[in-house]
Length: 283
Ligand SMILES: NC(=O)c1ccc[n+]([C@@H]2O[C@H](COP(=O)([O-])OP(=O)(O)OC[C@H]3O[C@@H](n4cnc5c(N)ncnc54)[C@H](OP(=O)(O)O)[C@@H]3O)[C@@H](O)[C@H]2O)c1
Image (cartoon, rainbow, N blue to C red; front, top):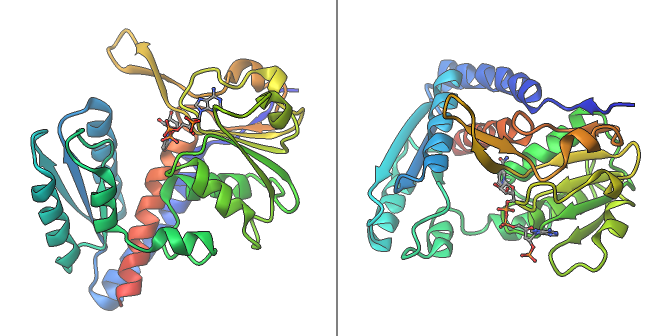
C-alpha cells in the first residue's frame, strides 16, 4: 500500500492561521507587533531564497520584518556589532543569522551572541525556544497521528541544528516524545540494521537516496529533512530532492514527508512561532 503523504505545507498553513490570530490579538490588546530580524552575509542563492521566504512569512502574519543584507567581506566584529544592536532593539523579538557564514567568521561566536543558554535548557527539556527544524519535525510526527510513546525512533545525522536536538527532544519524558532513540552517523556500523527497526525514521544526512526502500520498516513514519539540489528545471528553478528515495520508500512506509513541501515549510513556521512567543514573554 502506498504511504500517506504528510504535507508540511498543509500543517504549516494551519499553524500560521493560529499564529496570525495571536499576532492580531497582541497588537489589539497590547500594541505589540512581533518583529523578526534576519541577517544575511553574502549572496548564496539558497540563503537568499530562505531569507526572502522568512520575510514573506512575516508579512503574511502581520509581523514586522527587518532584513539586513551584508557584503560577503563583512568582518566578524561588524556582524557581532549588528547582532548586539538587534538584541537591544525593542522592536526585534527574534534574530535569525542565516547559515552558512563566510569562512572568515566563526559561526559559534555569532550563535552565542544570539542565543546563549537555550541549548542547555533543551537538554533538560526546558527550552523556551525549541530549534525550528526539530520543532517542525516533532509537530509533523504528532499532528500526523504517529504514536511516539515507546516508539523505536532512529535519527540519521548528528548535526547540531537537526540530528542532535531532535534526538534529545524525542527522548524527553513528555507527551509527543518518550521515544526510544538511536542516532546514526557516518561511523555507524550496518546502518540498515538500525533504520529497519524504526517505527519513526528521521533522516537528516544531506545525501540524496541515503535511505532506500530495503532500509525501512513496513508501516514506519518517515520524516525526510534533507534538501539536495540535483540540477535545474527547464524554467531555471533548482530541482530539489530529499535524503530518502521517495518513490520506492513510499511503497513501504506508512507515512512519509515529501521534499519539497515537507519539513521546509514547517521550519519557517516554527521560526514565526518562536518570534511570537518571544514577544509574549517580553510582556
Ligand atoms: N528542510 C529544512 O528546513 C532543513 C533545515 C536544516 C537542514 N536541512 C537539510 O537537512 C540535511 C542535513 O542538514 P544538517 O545541517 O543536519 O547536515 P550536516 O551538518 O551536513 O550533517 C549531516 C549528518 O549526517 C550524517 N551523514 C551524512 N551522510 C550519511 C550517511 N550516508 N549515513 C549516515 N549518516 C550520514 C553526518 O555524519 P557525520 O557526523 O559522521 O559526518 C552528519 O552527522 C541537509 O540536506 C540540509 O540541507 C533542511
